[in-house]
Length: 210
Image (tube, rainbow, N blue to C red; front, side, top):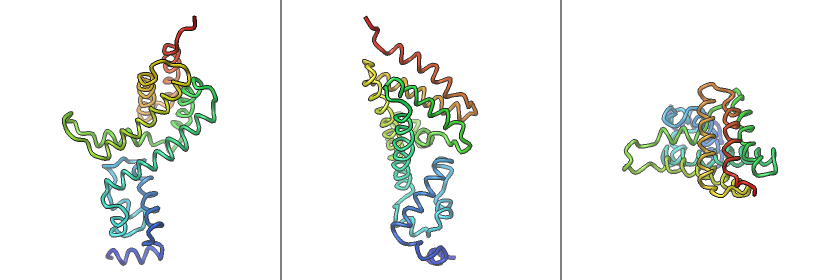
């Protein structure tokens, strides 16, 4: 069966631009979230989405372009619509919101479909071990999205009255990333352990009242 036959077999909507693009992105979202980039080939995305190869490349010039679009969608769904929204719903005070991150993570880690952090997974997959090498667009995009998460932490730190919000944000993100890796290894209590450490970190960072 050639590409045109596949498109016809998939139905009349298979080559409609908006519909095809959405189906490809949804297929890629699920596969990349669960398996990373290297383990997922174009053929798997074509099979999952039900579009022709020609249709996929008409919508996305390359796999790299598709990954970049996936990362943008991941930031909207995971970072903004889930993580930030959940944290803001749980607490109103900045310090409480910082700690609430790990309460949200605790529920996430216990979900049967927990898939880890796609930004970290793909960042590691696409990193060049040569420190002088120019990193790929995918790597840079992952780093940018992780920096956006750190910006959210820095904002909460500033609102909480923590003097060096940038340094605090990096410490906090280390705890977040570490708990995700530990949960991926099977430690379902990783977020609770991280929260215990986080409480000490935030107390130390706050100015001493005179």
